[in-house]
Amino acid sequence: MSGPRSIIPLLLVGTLAGGALPKTGRSAPFAADPVAGDALAWTIGRWEGERVEAGTGDRARLATEVAPVLGGAGVEERLEIRGAGTPYRGLYLEVFDPAIRKSVLMYVNASRREFARLEGTAGADRAEWLSTTARPPRGSRLTYERVDSDRWRRTQWVSEDSGMHWTVLFTDEMRRSKSPAVPRP
Image 1: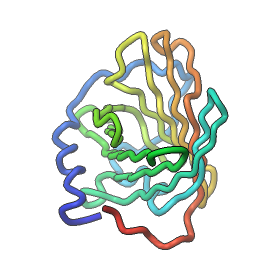
Image 2: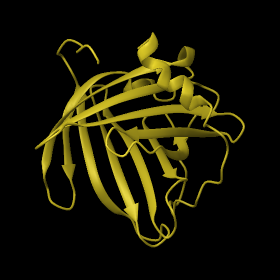
Image 3: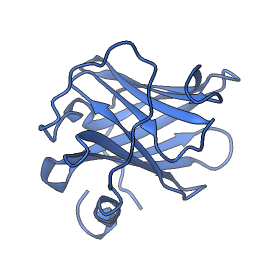
């Protein structure tokens, strides 16, 4: 993902300034190496699978590609979900911010075009971020879980009571793709 089409990660780096991380309500943190820029190396590659909307049970096909950026300091993910209507497209950028000692994830999608900033921890088999842009009492939490070397899961959680209770919004179940890379517009 080099060349003029990947200027987005360079623009996003400037927005990775510090902020406070809200409480997660979890009992114990998981281990992560804050020095390594490759905490999410296990997500690198092409993936396919499906998104399941928790509220309705609706399912849609998804395809995503995760690649290292900034000399391995982080990862960029380009996501496309095909259901009824126009495909949903999103872009994630994750980089460890040494100033605040947290993994920072920036997300934007093609329909809203508003950046969301999440801060948290990324590790060898799991990652968790909390939104710093959601306005209380609303909260947003994103988790990644490595199922095995060829599968991982992303779950988006929401809260309407400042993180006291969390509800699953959607789950993405992904498996390593065996199809060739598709050129990006």
